[in-house]
Image (cartoon, rainbow, N blue to C red; front, side, top):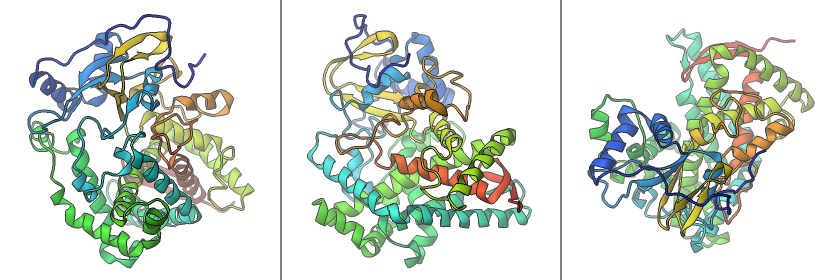
Length: 484
């Protein structure tokens, strides 16, 4: 029997016990954990080994970034790697979410024009409801153009892929840059209400600016692998990067939104009482961090997992389902075509990618008070006020107490009545998939739009192609649809 949504602070059947693990001696303990996390083990093995060592899915550890130049950052966390205890991170009465989006380290607000944007606000702060309502309004306004602009961008991406494949490029045709260009252009039109083609610099280089802006904020917390160790540790993980590096690019995007997205800015000012500056900076964060950043991580994994050479049988099933569903909707891809119930295998495959490869692997929250954190079977752990909780999703959503064959990619895992029950343990959106975003919670406002967009991408691929294959972020083969 599956546990209920929030067992994290229930009475339980056993008295709480101390949380196993520790932080080591000052400086050296955090430094050792940092080197394990980034160098010797990697993030997943870091959490796996400590859970096995302590025979517990709740334990103490240090999380990067740490020593030497991250002043004021306390790396000590209570790590959580099971579905039951993880739900504490969604309980606003238990955890405070202020300034802990990416952990104990908080990038300077100079990256967001001096505005403390909505995602860094806790639900009890007065500005949270105002900025969340603004984000939800932006999404509602975008619904008229979201699907057609996304599909127009996907067509452009696939045209570029086909052109590169026709040239016989070694290794296939990379889809990463064309996909990011597609994502950036459609989001500008949908969220900002502005066509980036109005500014040549924005149209050509906007997504590069966002990549750099995201990277400078996140690199201190991410294993990169682009340069050998110990250079990565010395050059990328030892100090925070200054926002001045990307300020000229950010200012270009700021002026673009100010000039061409005046209607969206006015919604923030007139309907939600924000200043124009705060409205623009929140729009850019929703556009760049939440939407562009999330899609840029998630959608390539979706294409790759479907396009692997050994996924031919899955592709055949998806193709048949997509085409049968499109026959009922006049052959056009859109929100109606991918509505819940029309393409159950497509939707389940999307959820399975989010389960195995969540775009945001870590979620954080600071304990508002002393409480007992409950795991499976009512096992309790004593958490003290002020302690930082750190949930590692890639392991929590492979919890063997909930998921059968948890380490395997099972595309139809969420199909049918029993499969749909498992959605309450899919946490990618900062909340269960069965819950809804609201002004009083921190769940992703675009949760449903993300799922629909991913389903539309899959549907468009199989509307256009009989088959395709990928290797990494490159298409190696596309077989265009043959007339029936």
